[in-house]
Image (cartoon, rainbow, N blue to C red; front, side):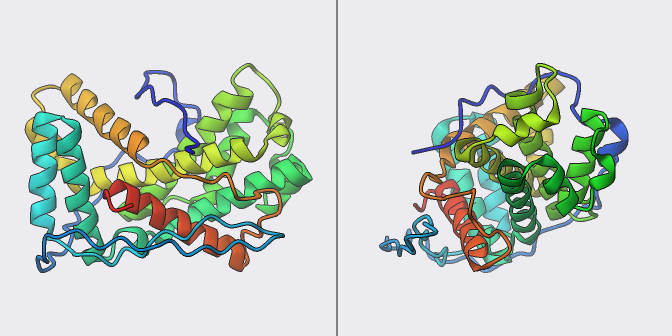
Length: 295
């Protein structure tokens, strides 16, 4: 059972967060992913999931470890270029599989998503605290007691800064964007009609799961485009076409990475303890497995 709703694609609405809270619009230094040796082309054998399901704190089934064949960044770039040119579901699946293999070899996939995991754990801890203990206690837990009662946009920007500070690397930028997207998901669900921020106290497990799913999807999307997005510039003939291609890429991820978090009790999960770390690792492994067509 997935947690995400239908993805409508990018919109032209005014950004939720004020300009001073957003990362500067500067192209980051070009990072060339390392080349890794090409591996065999066969798909890894299916592994039976191992469950860790204690009665008092149920956990999702552990996704199979991503230990299959690795590929080269050259094959990942070629595959993404073909997907951008044809924009068919199969071409995106092939490109995602090639990217997942290259990322695994280069250490930038599920096992290396350090900033993404940290951001997701911080987001989950804050949302669980807001729903279970109240917004003020949750803000104080982030060291943001001084922003209580301020303008909604200012408080949300402060939350974003606390959960995922600006960073210089592509991974840190992807984590920051992922948190902002999760916050925007919550804004649209709870605050878009001018309601007070205390409306977040009415969040339930499904709402928290949707925000986490948006965070993980956005992280994978931004890492994929951050590593290979130059292919869009090379293939697109106009800015409008580039936007359509990016919309297709995002829609593919949304439809592919359907995470099942129905068995997790977000209200009691200890995000800073072993159970929280287990959940974060499991979700990222599952997400990259689904993205790469290996789950």
